[in-house]
Amino acid sequence: MRRRTRRSRPIRTALFFTAGIAMLSVAGFLLAEHAAAVLEVREVSLPLVAEIPQFERRIAVLTDQVEMAELHAATSFGSQEENVNVYVLPEDIDFDRLLAVFDILGEELENEKLLTEISEITMSDPIPAQEEGLSVRSVSMKFAAHEDGVQTFLSLVKLAGLLTIGDTLSAEERLLLLQKTEEENPAGVVAIEQFFSTDLLRYAREPKTYETQLLRSFSSPSFTKTIEDTLQSPLLRDARRILGGAVGTRLQQYNLWPLPLMVLSDVRIHAGGAPGWFVLSVTVDVYSRGND
Image (tube, rainbow, N blue to C red; front, side):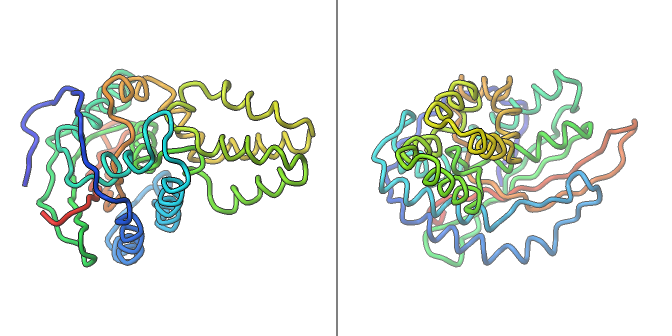
């Protein structure tokens, strides 16, 4: 077990892995098989965290990333395949890099007086997955936070592993927007696809720039309303709120984006010492390729 003994400072980490992206499909099956077990052991006692991560969406996101990597050789942040293999599902979890992410989040929430210092963070030894070539580590921590800080922490975990705007939308949301596009302006499908493939962090840093560019391709008020409704999806709102602020600035500054695939495994909550404050014990599962 690896253990955090002091607060780590964000560091620039360069990872160079070139393994194939085919393991992503296997990861999808892994998450599906573990979903029921995770739901049984999770203990959440407050309505604000009653909504658990959607495993079906994570599986769909992984599938989309495989297809996108095959269709698009490169993006502004490097190829999709490289981003997935190096950052989202690396060959092994970089503990220092992971600590840097939680340090940034903790420090910014402390600055906003929404969280006290995160306790010692521990990471378990890897457990080989049933499917060959995959493993999972459990990362545990404890902290006291205001309700708003709790929401931000859990939202960042939901964003972990996502790469693009399209990854934050459900299959139904993407299909609806494409259907409306074909009705409004078939030539606009290209603009929609480009918008879907936009890096999520870059979008969150300058949302108006990308949204204005997209809307230029369309003139119908009803279609504009459809796009505006889509932009209010929960994960996109979370991305703009978190990645568009100080946390996103520092993740970009220290080259910590994209985040590794994390799934909330267990949350135990108790009332804190002041109104609106709670004490949380959190465990997240972090996935990687390879059996260590």
